[in-house]
Image (cartoon, rainbow, N blue to C red):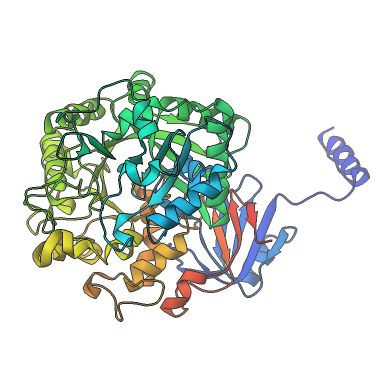
Length: 552
């Protein structure tokens, strides 16, 4: 009887036509697996679910999978899917829908771009934009509301600085605030820039930005979702198969969940709850979250220690070299940071804390050390986001506490024209110290902090390897002893980023049992001249063995 059933089944299959293979064999000139057991191969087999079956030579894999679908990318190079360990997906989408002020060379150019963008707005609608940087302007001074008022006397204008840690408002925007902004008071963890009479100038730093943000009309749900969709589409078009979204509200997390349920997430999102708020409360109540598709998880919380160096909000141990009397801002008090870290630890939630200045980093390390105690050697994978300026005595503490340094190579090349002015010749030696941290044994996860920097990971690879700008300056690199090798940089955007998101058993390398997330490149990033890293040709991006982007 069993034999008869087999024959009937075979006959039905033959009548139905040829059976499509459930296995695909990818062949390429070279595949960099980032797996030390088989670092370079020419073929990879994966199943219909997008799991890698095996890697190896072309002839061997084709012979073992005779009916497999063949995916031959010819002379291209394949690398594991690139993961940005620190980005802001909705922020990128928001930037795409608003006035782009990045690289504006002066206030006149800012105004010109704003006037052009205003033509797309309806009467009474706020004019919003992002990307201005006074460090790129001739006078290098913060602008004021007066600079905007002549052009926009009645329409509220609110412009986010390139780092997202300061905002520039006109008088109409400040009039919308339901609070008296005059006087000499300051919000906790923020700064309202004022003139000699106590009048706000229009610049709001760190937590002070919340005053203007609260006055803005709320986004409608369709626009908020569109921002996520646009951000994810831009990410996969640049070779990213994963993003650690640093600071996701509960509402934003629900949007991600709805997109995941509809199968509309083209890449993997490691969402970090936005501080000690509703999203963290959800994790504490319901436990760590992972969507069945593997495209969305939330098991971390993003906290803030201080502000940013460009807006002089990074907390320093001594005065800014170019602003005596100023030592920056603590966005969270040490007591509030300690309480949030302790809460996350009780809930089993990974802690990731923004720290730029040497004082901010020391406070985070001290807080982590106290909270972890004897458990510091465990697999907690707590992180410092940016870890930008470290005093010499604090630099080895990250490895000692098993704390991951989540760093952004393009921050160094963007900041290098003015960073030493802020810090002086001694402190700069402990800034953007990738090599020192890595050689000390610290896990180094790399990202971009988009939209503060470009979402393009090729620029991060280039910056990590050269420490030079797009013109190759300074020749030999800025503080070149801190350079990474091309392999180390690629590892930072793949296996190390996966480790930082508790996903290294799933992604980050191409090995049996892992997800078939990979990028097809026309060139080999481990063999091209350093300058060519910026312009690697992204032929396609694959997630779970399926294309989510193909070069037009």
